[in-house]
Amino acid sequence: MDYDELAVELLEKMNALHRTKAHIHVNEALCGEAFVLQYIALNGGSVLPGDIGSKMNVSSARVAAALNSLESKELITRRMDKNDRRKVIVEITPQGKDFAEKHWANIVCGATKLLNLLGEKDAKDFVRIMGRMTEVMPELWKNWSLV
Image 1 (cartoon, helix red, strand yellow):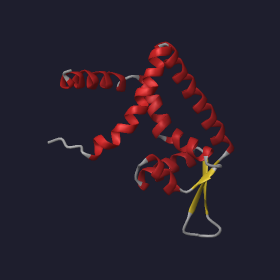
Image 2 (tube, one colour):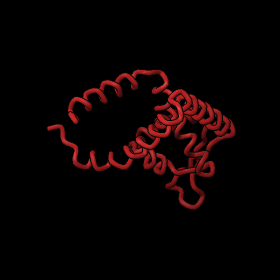
Image 3 (cartoon, rainbow, N blue to C red):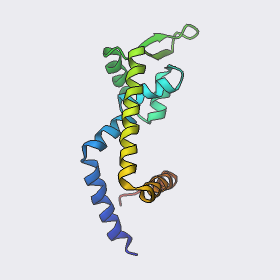
């Protein structure tokens, strides 16, 4: 098998997929403000900003920007921890929880439609391969070099 040729085809298809509107919505759901809301909701409604950064693997500045935006939309609040004033607790508001639930349901609906369009065999293969990719990617990046 010519893996170089297959790699070029893979990259072309990934690039085409990356340009779709659906990809943008899924990316936002898994990496953006919607993810932050979903994360807070799934963790009892309150978390520390550092936990968000760790889960998303992003800088504290990026987390702060997302939290500022969410707070201005009244989807979260921030307060000092009573026991440790150095800590800030981020809490989801009822509006934020409602938004997170509706947004997640919309994303699941879209993923369900995608899998349905693929058909049972391809859908199962796709999910299996995505799982396999999550297993091998850490090894790839550990040894990654562009030279």
